[in-house]
View: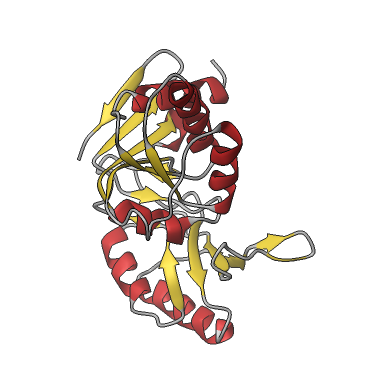
Length: 230
């Protein structure tokens, strides 16, 4: 079974948690897109949901496939969000943001009663940090913000380079007009402390550590689909 087939299996299992009439947060990324495709099939068969996309990319796919959408202002309280992850540990702590939508993903997740994470088994890790941690930052004062992040990393014993994400010849900008710094820490021994400290830096808009947000993870491997709970 290849990686895409595993993503489809995880998405199909997550779809079983979607009920008629739900207000549904819809995530961003390759696994979430497989979920959108399966959801669209159910919608065409009569399933009624109202979706809130976590990115412009997801919104375009939903509209193309006929999944009805609302803004989060129109639906500020959601029943369920289904999204992928770049890394997930046994406590359902996540690194997200590889696709650049971490701010909107976190806002939507926090507006939901439940969040289900879908992933293939390659995303499950013992300790977060091998995947670079995305840190969304305001363009104003970027150099100062970067120095503050460097000093924070040093104070917490984190090593590794921090790169500003590029897109073509320029720098990547999020849907909100911000930049992303990717921190290659390798191993994050205290994710809670790092998350709290990053939140205290004024130029940091958001970071890709999702802690105490996921209520269930659906993990697909070559031979089976399993679930993780906190």
